[in-house]
Length: 129
Image (tube, rainbow, N blue to C red; front, side, top):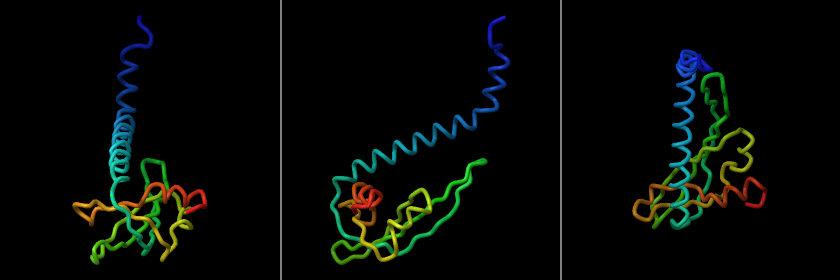
């Protein structure tokens, strides 16, 4: 009899496939985000301002995590736009207080598409931004 028995492997797969699938989807979503974020680093930069932040809890199975959603505004050619940036953890609110300045990158062909500059966010987290 081969070890482990095929039936045991199939039973194990039956119980863990949702976790495997969600892991694969998570890795894929993270990869797409990183690719888009990297491409956006060549977009033009404008100053923006934090308008508000909201904290909510995401629950996935028995895992809970705090997500802070930062809302910001910016102006391109005298037109006003807004965007959101999500960070993990309530403690990161200190880095994005209401009214604070943020560096925003926007898509030249569609200024309503934006994100916060990765380097600026990173420097804020280490206390130099």
